[in-house]
Image (cartoon, rainbow, N blue to C red; front, side, top):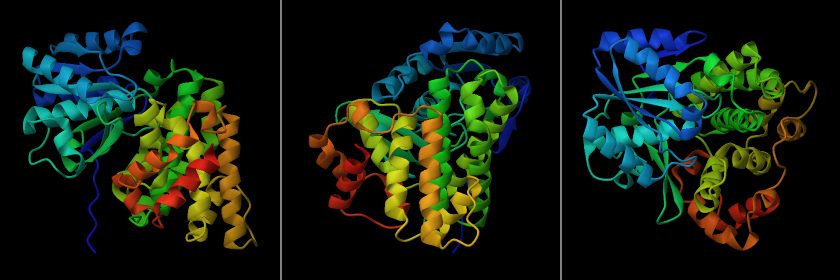
Length: 382
């Protein structure tokens, strides 16, 4: 069966990446950028520094800083209005997953029309989005290089999974210097998000040798560097290695897709407005316990990538080592252990589970669950 592999045409990683990206933007002839970002990044001066570099390069800048942590349909509509008002000819997303996803939504509707709600699902758009340059400031979501766009519908209280080849940025930028000022809690949550991407891609029914190689290397790098990045935020080497790790994890899941961890975490984010990476981290071992029934060999490989000695062990035992290693890493970076600590209520589980089964991310989980099984996974994570 033919396999398609999606990735931005140009990807810049490492120190001084922003300067290199601006040279590329100039060569493409763009004149006026809408920077899609959030208020915290404006407050710490990061947006101003990037805007100054662009303006020095004779590129005009309009800033939309109204992105929420879980971007909404309303955020997309507000950003689109500002884009049209200022006649911007391209978009720069600056931040983590939320600004990138919001920018993708703006760019997609800018050329295809209608509402972002029209594009929920797989490849629902007809035209390429407005050109998007994604400058990343966190090592986790990989949204700067994927075709995934997650937008919260405030009316239905759900996160819409928009998986569309036309949301792929034309240029992604991962400069570890932009990641140095991120707090430990955000570093931990985004790092565990990246680990989830790699693991779900590796056990996915859509996995192939290319995504496998990316996923395993990402797991190795996360295991080796996440704790250091969390404990010492100014560790540029750990930050750079985490940037590579999350990018590799993005390459994996962008093409192999994901599983029930994301399908279930999206519902928690939409229903309670909870941080995505934390929800993933809590759900990850419980979903893999469910998956271990059918892919213990795959989880054995994950155990090895996380530094566990699996020599002489059968696949079932090694799979359990992988699950324990996930829990240990999560604990080491101070992620809450249960959904109860986040305020999730047992009486909401049937609704959450029903919506999770509709989420496109779950379609490539290694075994398909029924409603009762998804409910049990949620309950186990409480």
